[in-house]
Length: 171
Image (cartoon, rainbow, N blue to C red; front, side):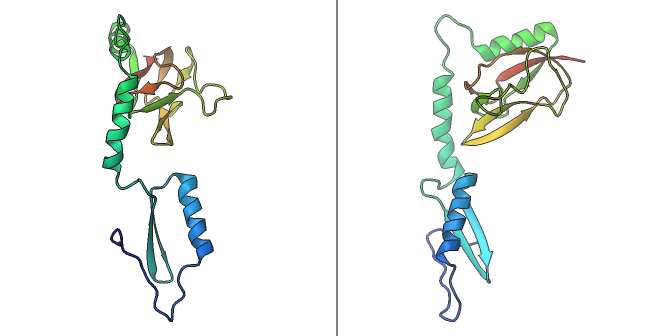
C-alpha cells in the first residue's frame, strides 16, 4: 500500500503509467462513485484518491445531522417510526426496517412502477425498495415472507437506521 501524499516514480528505464490510462481510471472512479482506487500495473502500484474524501468516518458526521434534521417531528404529530412499531405489535405484523440512514425510493427510476404495493405478496429475497446512502443505491429485500399491509414512508423521503418502512402480514 502506498502511504497518502507519496508519489510513485518509475526508474528511467521503465515507462510510467500513460496519461490516457490515468484519465481512464479517474473516469472509472467517478462513474462508480469510488473514493479510492489502487492499481498495480507493470510491477508498480498506484493509488488514486478523490479530493474531499479523506475517510468514511470524516464523512459520516456530515450525513447524520442532515438525516436527523429531516426526521424532526412536526409539532402535534407522533413520531412515524414509533407509530409504525406499535401498529406492528398490535396487528402481529412483521416490520421491514431500514438498515441505514438514507433516502427511501419505492421504484428503481422516477418513471418506473414501484417495486411493491400494498397487498403484494413478498418472499425473503423480494426487493421492496431502494435506500440511497452516500450516492449509492442499496436494494432492500423483504427478508420475510407475507403480504405487504402498510408502507410507512413516502417516496424520496429520508429514513433513519432501524425506521420501519413496511409492515408485512406473515404467511
